[in-house]
Length: 383
Image 1 (cartoon, rainbow, N blue to C red):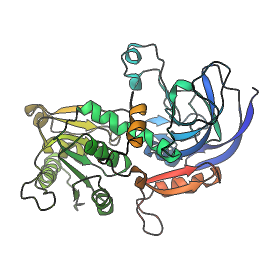
Image 2 (image 1 turned 60 degrees about the horizontal axis):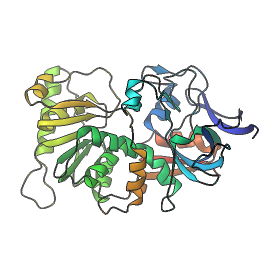
Image 3 (image 1 turned 180 degrees about the vertical axis):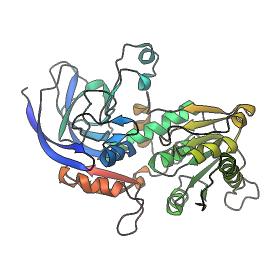
Image 4 (image 1 turned 180 degrees about the horizontal axis):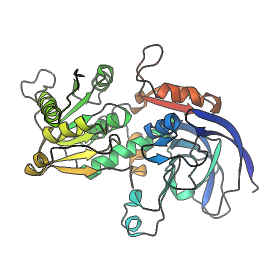
């Protein structure tokens, strides 16, 4: 099979996206060629689009964004792959070294040699999925059952983040869960908590429409709209007092007509990266509980470490996912009655590479120009 030309959305600077043609070689012996059909936009993509960097990680060459993706296999080398032309696949886009101790032990998501599509961390950058076709190792292309749509296939990636957080937290049936941040990942953390048998799932956000969406659509049992105080707390003492008050408000919530308050969380999913939320998580989590650090926001924070230590509250890092894709696909296909309808998270859809800048502009908003809530923006590659 010879190479082919493909069109790609390429980021050259902050907000400078250009549709360009690039040469795609024939797939290697361990690869298949996939026509990308669906890509959801992630917060990290948005940071690159708006700032040409994500935190301290700066883009050093033109970069194609996108990593929450699904597509259709269009070429398979003659090497006995289990995949065939026409198969629909969810793309696991991180490529670990597969040789280090971390990879061998199954924790390939934190492999030091990881090359992750649409991330500028490694150089040369691994180009993302907002392009017509990619060559990708067959072992990281996960076949979708007929019951699932390609949109489901793209949702597998953020769902995997939530499932990995669930596993790191050792979430058990009967737990009380608090989720801080009602974006797509926070909502999916709430969803997997429901499936895991959590007794109560509480979600909090500064946006009332987001927490209302969570409760109305079965992602959470109770919610708190976090008040924005003015002036904002300035001293460390004032900040911690604010966090303690917020934790008490969360613990005092009641579900439905129950006379019993929610109380402390067994597991708290912190999905914002905001300092005050991490502080609140420590105060709201029960002795022996766990806080899952998922949000990537403020890199240096002041935390009440002694409060965590005295309760033996574990602060647990969560970075992407490992060994979750097949389970996520099976869960989506299972019709589990405890799983909310995750496709409701996709609030906006755009078509074609030419529409990608508009898709990013929408993803940067909490509400669109009509006043509708923005949660997950999906790009369909076909116009």
